Image (tube, rainbow over all chains, first blue to last red; front, side, top):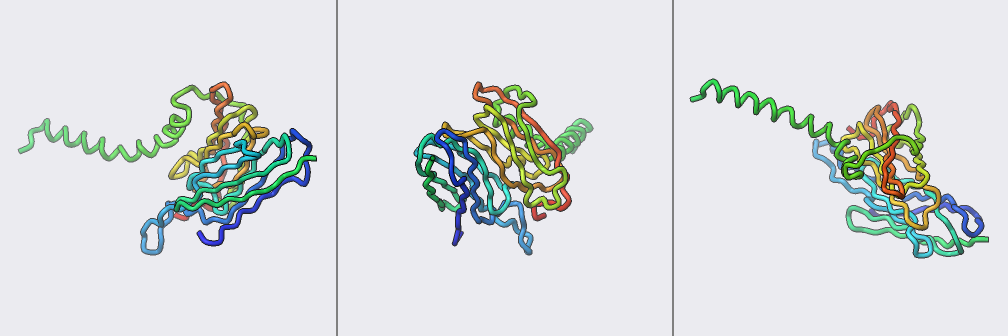
Length: 108
Length: 138
C-alpha cells in the first residue's frame, strides 16, 4: 500500500495513573479475500493482520485482525498513563509492510 | 458388477460426502470458539456488546465491547463466511478492558464476544444485528 497515513487521537491532558481513551485510524483497503473481480476470480486477501500499541515500552493492546474488519480500520481502546512517555503504534500488513506511528504524551 | 450391498454402500458414501460441506460450514463458529477457549466452558454475562440494532451498511458496523477484568476478547460474526473478526489481547498497560472498532457483516446475524478473564475462565455475550446491505462484496 502506498501512502498509508495513520491517525491518532489522544486526550489533551490526563493525570498520572489515569486511564485514557486512545483512538486510531489508518487508511487501508482491507481487501478481505472474499470478493471477486469482474472475471469471477477471487481478489487475493490483503489486510492489516495485526495491530499493537505500547506506552513507554509497556504493551497496551495486541490485536489480531481478520477480513471482517472494515476498510480503514478504526480501533479505540484505553491505556493507563503512569507518567509522561511515548505511544508507539504498529500496523502489520499482509504484504510484509509495517507502518508505525509515535506520539508523545505528557501527564499533568 | 455391483451387488446390492455395494450399491447401498455407494449411496451412503455419496450422501455423506454431499453433507460434508454443510457440516464444515456450520462448524466454523464452534471451531473458532473452541480454538479460543480450548474447549473450556463459556459462561454468559460480564461482557457488554454495543452495536446498532439495524445496520444499514454491512460494510462498516460500529461495535464496542466492554468486559471488565478481561485479559483477552475474541469477536465473532456467526453469519459471515469466516466467523473470526478480531482478537484483542490486553497488555499490562491497558486501561479498562474496552475496545471499539468497525466490522463487516455479510447479512443479518448474531455477533458474539468471548472474554478470557484474568483467572482463565471464559464468559460471553451475543447480540443480533439486522443488516440491510451486506458487506461481503458478494
